[in-house]
Length: 128
Image: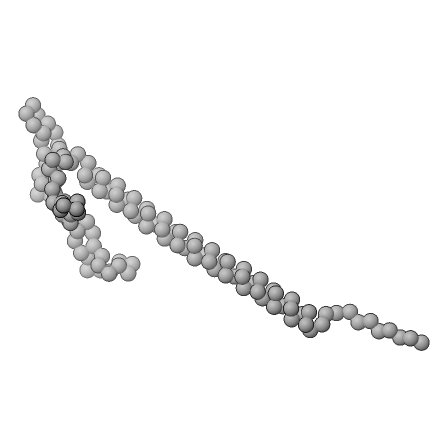
């Protein structure tokens, strides 16, 4: 009698190839998820910075509202200034405009570090 034994299964070489292909696929998928997480974190940080910038520009717009450009000074030839000075128009009479006292914007350093910023500070409105 002729006996044939037929065993089913995979060879160790086939298993090794499949395991290595799965490893490459999972590694690629992991790097995609990691990069996606980094992009989300960076996007959120940029959104927060933009929100702070919008708020700061709005605050400057409120400060500079009603400023007479003829009273604006403190700029160099390049248009840069660390302490612009100005007066606001508060009203008018028959002869001229009425102004508030002199005001200026000035940057003052802060002694406390903020989010790793080396030289933190703030812009203040100084009147009188």
